Image (cartoon, rainbow, N blue to C red; front, side, top):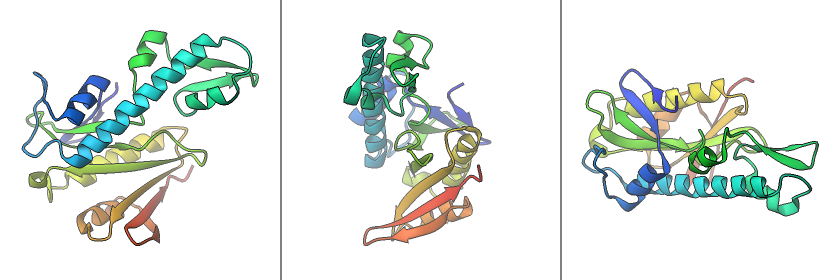
Length: 211
């Protein structure tokens, strides 16, 4: 199961074609988009998902080209995308087959936020990439304006936190907001995040998962 379900929402893990449609702003026959979707933030998130999927596919192809031997700096491309080294040399792939790996964006990607009541897309939420060397992920999210103030963002963030709690590779979650984005700051604080730093442009938050 790739989607995350809450009481009112479905966090739908975007496929590459779905992400590409959001980037282009052109709905497909099965897409139901709310007014104002996708916004620029949604396009940026979907663009990041497409880029990550391309990197994953390239890494998978690299692994299958080199069934043994040292790959050197080439193998760095595969880091974080479901590949590992066996005995420090030959790489192996955690995907079941080559075809599915080329299309699979993995769980640390962009999710479309859909209302369960009418299946309408009202925003996006997701990860900037897979866990880093500190086992930390960074999240971002956004909703169409007419969905603000209804608790949807908090509900979606809580579900993403629970996903991270259940994932063995994630020990902490980071996020950031603009200084004037009070609503997003409230979402993060209600979700258990703490402020760790500030700069001229952003406020930075973290949530430890106690692992």
